[in-house]
Length: 346
Image (tube, rainbow, N blue to C red; front, side):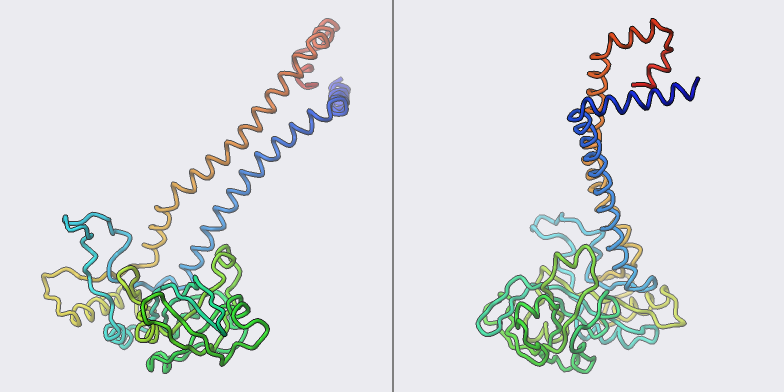
């Protein structure tokens, strides 16, 4: 008897779908759109978070950052002068970078700071190039590989050589089908009088991720050349140093060495606070979670509205179906159909 009821319910369902094709299609479409929006948004949120965490992990779990201030604790409140209290902290200088580099527990100190540039070849300018000043070790912390040429060497960094590594899309837009290696580009930063020739020595193809399509035009300069020739440092960007501990030294030991060296280089007395910040990778991950947590929740909540709208549509269609078949329900009940059987058929 139960098997007969099951077969009959399935048959009635298919008859209803055939007799109400437009209604059925709209119902399925509403649910499909709602589910697709929720799944797509969740996948996008997860993908963005995964890419950023991979970027942090690429620098190594024991590595840490030295910066002028801890931006995870920075606030835009000042002392009445209109400037926040961390504004006047000194930049990390070249001399201090060398002090960090030669500490016994430091395997490498990778310099990094960002600044915008424009590039010109044969009178064709390209603006909005996302540029960075780095030391030679930047490739160990960046996903991708060289499709042509090479990276600049520590000697070239020390000599402030005018060399640059550019992205493959930028190379194609600047030089077309020509080989960019060894060719000259004129670089400007928007500052008056800054327009310097640099030689392209490498083309870097960044590994595909959610950001690769957003920032296609990027360039990497020796940080010394960016400081000296392009005057790239301003109050709106700052030098950060990624410190890589040497094997056999713990992160805490190397942090103590860096703090002691910088305090000595800056002449800070025992009772004075540090005028620089040492930040661990896990602190940056926590900051990222704090900044994006609410945003991601809002995205999921808004996308869930789409699913709810689809559900409301289904409820409306079901109510209409029940209303249209009131007579049929009465007949079924009069011949002995139970409430459960009628519910199954609908």
